[in-house]
Image (cartoon, rainbow, N blue to C red; front, side, top):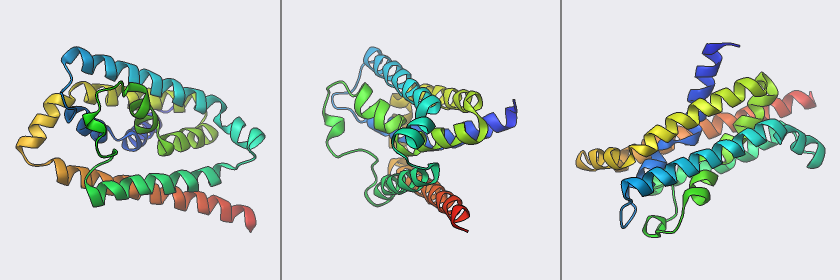
Length: 201
């Protein structure tokens, strides 16, 4: 087992999970969450998302190939396109989530936090692809580390949000993060297309 590969994979998954979007969502809730509410939502959403990602790491490839007859490269292209739209929305509109969602004080821990904001199309696609290339153990360890970092960031979302607001950095940071997400999406699409071209030669 290669520690370097696990760290690199964790950072890649963390970029796809994009903790920044969770900070903006949680810090803009109206009325704001209490510490107990924030902790409950954070724990519930991250555990649910990790279970989803673990499950798809284990059986995702089987489901795609045997049940749906879909190749991994097709999933990469489709997931990349969806992820690109999310990144483009952040760049153009300065938000990752639907307008008005932060004003709804219903339970958001499973939907949209766990899925699709944490276990989103990009993360799911990458998890299945990584499991095929590097094995389930390394993929699950990398996902666990990435989700744990996201968990810590979400716990500190109120303080982080206040600091960013004072610095007037919220808008620029969302757009920069959206650009990174879009770039990762393009790379995912190109990787899928490259794999497909390799099958038709």
